[in-house]
Image 1 (cartoon, helix red, strand yellow):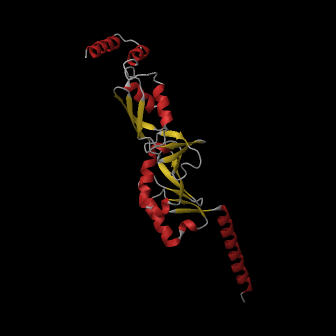
Image 2 (tube, rainbow, N blue to C red; image 1 turned 45 degrees about the horizontal axis):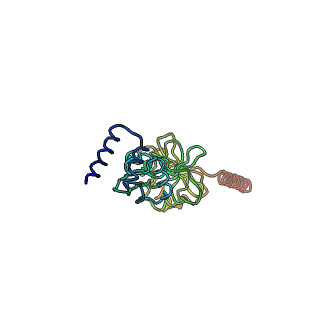
Image 3 (cartoon, rainbow, N blue to C red; image 1 turned 90 degrees about the horizontal axis):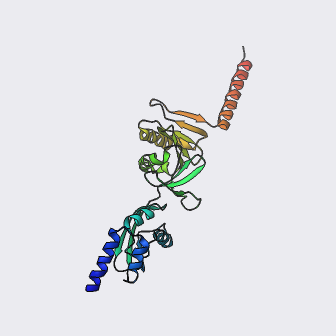
Amino acid sequence: MAFAVVAGSVIYGIAVGGHTGEVLDGVGQPLGFSIDKVAVHGNSETSEIDVLQALWQTGSQTLLSLDPTDARQTLESMPWIDRASVSKIFPDRVEIDLEEHRPYAVWQTGQSFFVVNREGKKIVPYMPGRFDALPVVVGEGAGSAAASIIDDMESFPELRARVKAYVRVGGRRWDLELNNGVIVRLPEVKPMEAVAEVVRLDRQNTLLEREIAAVDLRLSDRVVVRLTDGSFTRRKERLEERAKLIKRLGKDKPV
């Protein structure tokens, strides 16, 4: 008991005097306070080795010199870690609990691609293959605005399954780039009403299966459909042939 009291007084004196971690480690190691066990919980994307390396970067060798706040901040600077808590369990154990970012979408900004969380925070650069199932959002501000359009599209699973990318336009509205190349241009106001109209037209007339380049719903009182260049050319040729036929039939008509 006397030893414990003396040791405690020494540690208190060192702490009050603002001595370095090396001094605290020098006191703590003979007392059995060396960090010998580290338990990591909640990590999926972050390896335990990376967590341990981050912990050692604090320079602490014993629980006496380990500052849980510094350790937490070091851990939270790692790409996947959203929140961390660090607890000292005397005499020799550290408990680390982690909450990682949840990948929500792939955001293309310029020529760069990033995996982002629901709030649009960049987590890591996107590498093909790992997160291919995530929705893709494109353009300035698309990362932080993605949740609104992606969540709303859950009400339209048929169309959502055909969306290749959600393209943010002017920071105000969205275009839907479908996997067959068709662009659906949504209005800034009440975009889901426009989506419902596209779904209705597609069910009735297989609109999105036709040779069209875009469906423009930015005007509330009309739907504008733009043909592909090839389809427009063929349609023009058919109309010209029809006009020639009518003209020829008119000439052949007896007077």
